Length: 381
Ligand SMILES: Cc1cc2nc3c(=O)[nH]c(=O)nc-3n(C[C@H](O)[C@H](O)[C@H](O)COP(=O)(O)OP(=O)(O)OC[C@H]3O[C@@H](n4cnc5c(N)ncnc54)[C@H](O)[C@@H]3O)c2cc1C
Image 1 (cartoon, rainbow, N blue to C red):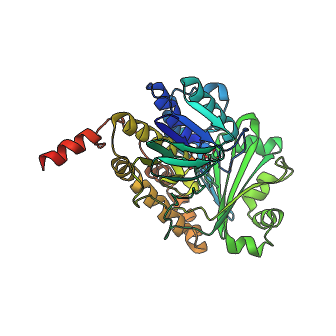
Image 2: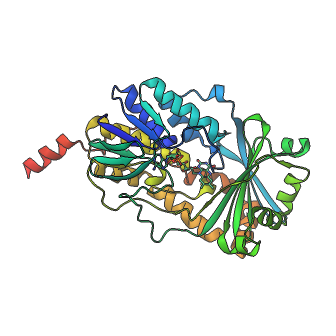
Image 3: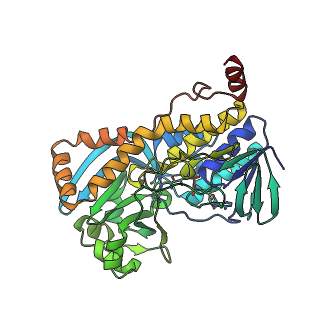
């Protein structure tokens, strides 16, 4: 096996694989899915995420995402609209993740599909193809926990149920939605609606479990209930649901930021390192940011704990703000008051969108001590 094994070939894992392979290391990427798959995601690709993908060498142009230049917030009869401070894209994860994984393989990473990692410990993994040893492990399994490296997610905003489904909107509603990402706030949750490639609309919805229970614990029941929101009802009038059934997720640990000790040589990437509330549209960018930092740390021989410290420094601010906003938006009166305020100061939406973003500074070696630095530091003391 290689010196470096990457668990998971989603965005973080595939990006790290591509970056390491470009630099001459031949990492092994173990991905449990043998085929392309839809993923639960709003599929809003921020400008930062696009920049990270470009830095990994992926050309997004041929993938044909839908351009997004504005944001609308809706609650009840209130609707506020603002240009985004950056151009975004609506692109399906099925297409994006597959393109990035193929790109990693093209760069020289050894991508092994249909391999499930069951557990891991210091320098070793148990997989569906038998045991594997590697001194350096990049854990990029997304929301999925791996035995031996569970996330310590106490105190996070768990308890939401998520759904994603594709719709073909009527011509008039598709035209009205075009160029915007829309966030519809409803009692006990929110929904994101935007176009992706091919003019199809992605509806991604998060609801408190109590709201889901009250709607009879079914997707059609919940959808019927949230269609009380006039904006969503207008958009989905005469729409055809294309997904045979929605993708679902529950108990996402929003606000999680990894800090607990890990075995040496274990670098956590993407959702294994941090989970920002979905409405921020920044999860993919954080995943890619972590991939770049981790690749740089591995190439420079930096300790995993220094990599994690640097990642925490980069993302703690936006993560805290987005988690605080999600908590505040859960109160029904707070949501209406916020919308009323934003109507008067629509520029605030753009500022909030900018504040919840993780900047993409030039990723230099600064802040990542190498093992050699550590040794000389200890020798000096
Ligand atoms: C409801 C919702 C909406 C969201 N909307 C947006 C949005 O609009 N914009 C945005 O930027 N972010 C959004 N996010 C966040 C974003 O989807 C994640 O942050 C991002 O996918 C994290 O990337 P990742 O590479 O860490 O994990 P993933 O993309 O989940 O990749 C993990 C990979 O690991 C593989 N894997 C898992 N376990 C194993 C195992 N044991 N062995 C081998 N392989 C394994 C999986 O098959 C998968 O391919 C949203 C999240 C949710 C929940």
